[in-house]
Image (tube, rainbow, N blue to C red):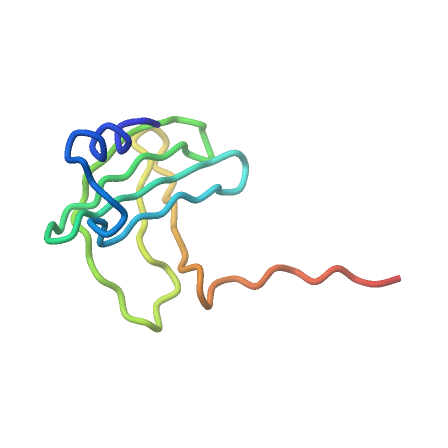
Length: 101
C-alpha cells in the first residue's frame, strides 16, 4: 500500500493540499487509505479487503456527502465484490461499553 505515498512524493503535497485524507484500520485485518487533492474530484484509494485480504489501488470520483450521512464513501473489492464502507469518524458508531461486574 504505497501508491498514495508515491503520489504525495511526486506532487510534493503537504497536509494543506489535501481536500480529504484518511487512513483506517478495518475489522478482520482490512485497511483503507484515501486521498483527494484540493481542486480535484478524483479519490485515490488503496485498500486491503477485510473479506478476502486482496490489496489493490483504485481511482473513483469523490462525492461530498451530507452532514447527516453516516458513510463517507465506499469501495467494492475487485476480487470478491465485498463493499467496504468507510464511516465518518464524528457521529459514527459508538464503542461498546464494557459491562462492570
